[in-house]
Every structure is written in structure tokens, then in C-alpha cells.
Image (cartoon, rainbow, N blue to C red):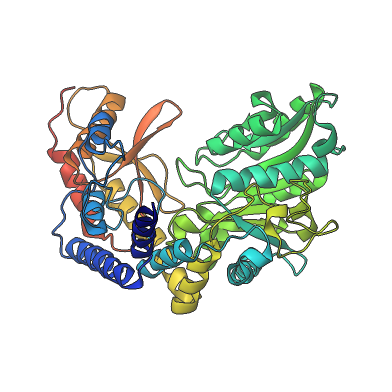
Length: 483
């Protein structure tokens, strides 16, 4: 028995051995550095693996009863080879950025140190970093010194948290205590192009699908102000209480920015909470050239802003910003004597304000990247991506076999192919997307805009060039269609 105990102790000691860790770390960094080099030298041609879910599941089947690999390098090699390659310049599909290598290293440090952010004493450094990041972002939005906020795990939680605060403040009752059972129906006015997380938030908040009133958009897929007014009047006449308007900055499908300044006028007139979903497009605030797209954002009551989209951070890191910092405590109400002081509303005890109790060192990667590269680096990046998207739009517009859905406002662009054959254009776009994905040479997506299918690209990789985008059009033209 003593010998077995000694063997178990030796095994644990070996797992935490510093030299073993050093060796493993060098192996992983060398592997990832070679991977980045191969991408930069065009040695990796396919952006994503051509494999079905069931086959991938089979590849990774494991009962975990016994060790199946000799070292960490062995398994990470397989992970890298079978993953999507976001750093590849042909990855222009989803709104997830290729993370800065330095930021990825910070995620490694965060995981290793494992300092949480529920209360200050659990993660003192990252709590202070987070507060400074929030101050920086709030200043860019145009909020004053009374603003506040925090970081949370993605835009879905960000929208939910902000809208929970709106419900508590604008419903006229303490909904955290009494709920909604005896309350008149609450509702929100949102663009018909709003992100699906808004509907999800309404369901969680207890106001249901009927509480999400979708407002029509104009020809650029921006919220129609006249439709906003009529939707409000209709809701009031039906006995509903409107608590908020959600503005897109920008929308997911088309990258369109709602007219925030005009919406702010409407909200002030009717005493409504203005929430701006800036998950993707708030980063345009960094660009002198494009920050006009967010005119009026400083008048919002709350804003969310994803750093894992246009700030080149690993997922997930979302800022939730409140113009009135006191409102950042309104979404939740809890007591936990083992964690919080009874009367605590301390800025540094973050679990009082977030859906998460604990979370990782979210601020570390953005704080470090800003410290290393400075704000201008990110400003130049955002401007470059928006500029490149407009260049691509001009190429599409000047091609007689392609057409734009709208002129892009951000780095999201929607277009479709017009082959010189009689065909079902919607089915052609679907087939294009399917064949491009199967080839693995590009990653693009599609979207449905008022019944018309368009191909959709998010130009988010700073390594993507105009030639890469021209190559995409060539690939599309070269496909053989069955319609």
C-alpha cells in the first residue's frame, strides 16, 4: 500500500514538473510558430477540413481509460491539422478574428495562472486591467466619468445583461423581486435585422417572443424611423409597455449601421432605454475615417462591444458599457456571505454584475495587446479592413456577372453571382457556397435578405489582400453548375 501511494505521488509530481512543462511549452510554441510560417508562405492551401461531423466524431472517439498519446505535441498536431485556419487570408466567413499571437499567449498565461474575477482577491491584477480597459472603451464611446461596465463571455451574454438592466429600470417595478406575472406585457423595439441573441434575451427575461417587436428596415437594411414610430404606437395601443429600443452597430447579415442619433431622439421623447448592439461594429470608433457611422452612440444607455471580432482577440471577450455606472448593478441581485460584503457595490467585485460568477483573466489579452502595439495599431487595422471591403465592392460592382446587395458600410459584404445561363439564382448561390466549402480553398457563408440568397464575406483577417478577393471571384466563375 505504501509503495502504491509512493507511485501515485511520483506520478502527480511528474505531471507538475517544471522541466517537463518547459519541454511541452517549447514543443507547442514551435509547432504553432511553424504553422503560422506555413500559412504566411502559402504552404497551407485549405482553409478548413472537408469532413462531416460524424466522421470527425469518429476520428476523436476515446473512452479515456488509458493514455492514448505519448506527449502533448502528438495530439496538438492533429488538432491544428483538423481545425479551421482563421489566420489563412482566405478565411472570410464568420465574424471571428484571427487572434494576435501575443494575445493567444496571454490566454495561455490566463489558463495557467487561473486567477478568477468573481471578486478582487481572487484575481487582483486582471480586475485592475479590466477596469482600465472599460474606462478606455467608455471614453471612446463618449461616455462620461460616471460610466462603468465589465467584460463578459460574448455578445449574447452582453446583450442579455444590458437588457435585464433595462427591464429593471424601465418596467416601473422591481422585476428582480416580483417577476412579471402580474405586470402588463413588456416589449422591445428591434430591427428586423437584429441578432438572434436579442430574441434569446427576451425569452430568458420572461417577455417572450411577443415582446420582441421587429421594426422594418430601409433599402440599406438600417432601421426605418417611420416604421419605428408606428411600431411604438401600435404596441402602446395594444396595451404593451415598451421599455427599450435596440440599435444595430452593425447588423450581422449586412453590416449595416442603424441611425443611432435619430433613434436616441426617439428614445428620449418616449423615455425608453437605448441599447446599442455594437458587438461587431463598435470598433469603428477607433477609426477617424469611419467613426461617423456611430454618430450618437454616446447618447445610448448601454453598449456592448466584442473584442474577439474587430480587436483581434481570442474568443470570448465582450465589454458591457453603461452610461450611468450605477445601472451596471441593476441586471442581477444576489447575496452570498462567503463571497460578497453585505453592502458591497464595489467596482472590483465583478460577480455582482455579471451572469458568470467566475470568469477567466479576460482583460489580460486586450490590455497586453494595447500596451504592446498602442491604439493606433488597432485604428489602422479597422480602417484597412473597411477600406478593403469597399475596394472589393467596387470590383464586384464593375463585374457584369456579379451584383451587390447593398454598398457595404462595414467589413461585411453581401453579393451574388449572375451566371449567363437560365437558372434559379437562389439555388446557384447555395451551390456556390457548398462547393467552395467542399473545396476548402475559401471559407464564405450565405445569408437570406428578404427572400434573396446572397454570398456573404467578413473581411476580418489583416493578411487578406485584394488579390485574395479577386481569386475568390475567379473560383466562383470556374465552378460547374448543375442548375
